[in-house]
Length: 511
Image 1 (tube, rainbow, N blue to C red):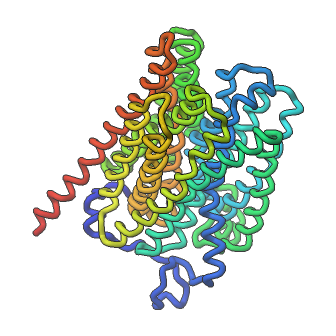
Image 2: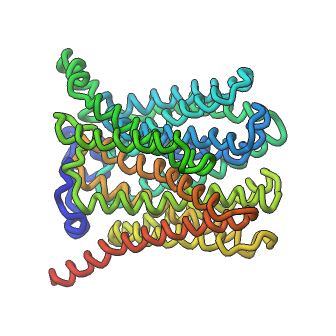
Image 3: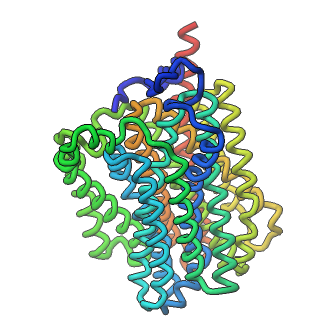
């Protein structure tokens, strides 16, 4: 991964990536591959953008009805949070190797397999109700998260491999980002309807049916991509042996295990306290494994993530995304719980209050595409996105328990998607410019890992603050959580402004 170039130099130069066109390469079209028909391109975009939507829908479908699911397994609401937590944990951690696996086996192939995996794991999650074991249900949710981990980086890599730099690619990435708020809203609304009016396993059965349909459409719509593993295997039958030798198995084990244990420690601590032996042990072992991962990555031939080649500016992008999205995880979780537990409103009412989200997400995607097409640097768009994460947390941190929805809550649901849909495409575009086409999966997995993993860590930090300051007042604890979100997004905004001002200085110096 050639990331030694300065991020701001890339913004100034906007270099073109090498292309893979066939004999018609002299024709001006927006693809890095041979041109495809508009109908096939539409199907491709539908299925790829739907990956982002369904991943978010799967996250939302266990947040609102978590108390109903917990009661069906006869566990407390506190233990019931492990349903959504298990999904977030595996989707965040397994994205680290997912991009590398996609680079080896082919992003198209892994994308289709991921849809099938999601269908099977969703079916089993619904059937887990008959086991009467909440542990088994949580494990099934974790299997759903692994499917999400395969879907997201491979979807991003497909878009990065298919489209050239330019307005079409900017628009496509914006459409992909729009799938997040739309999917979350659909997941919240339909899970609320099904859980309250019918039987909660049916929301997982519906996910299984939709996933199978998307797997079929993906097989038809996504063309074979250049440089993928299956092509190398056709040319050299022994190529299949090389990936077993070159794949960073030790780095995968130490990296994933370290992230899992560190995450579990942070999310377990609010319930049992940081002084608990299990929390200390998980934290120490997790940190030790992550140190071992850094040691391994510097010495293997094909590292899972070539950390030593990641430039300072690429690291800045990852830090900014981690701070922004960790604050978003705090915001959305505590906002929904604020509505259902402090305001004592039904989950259907909470789901209905999310309805501004898809419309705001569409507006944010259009704005992002417009800004990028007008030549606004992606680093500026990324910095601007942190403002909306910050504003959303401020709105709920200062909101009275009993207040008209339209005064403050509505505005949070209207502005928060601008943070999501402006940060994701801008950061992805920046990273895609920093890597060659054959390593788009690694870049995509880095962004996706940071986005999903940071949300879970943010909840762990906010949960610690909540339990520390709440005392006998749940409202005080929620305020503490929202102020934690303000701190995370505020620091992220300050960090994001550095490359913006640095770029302005370089432009003035070049005149």
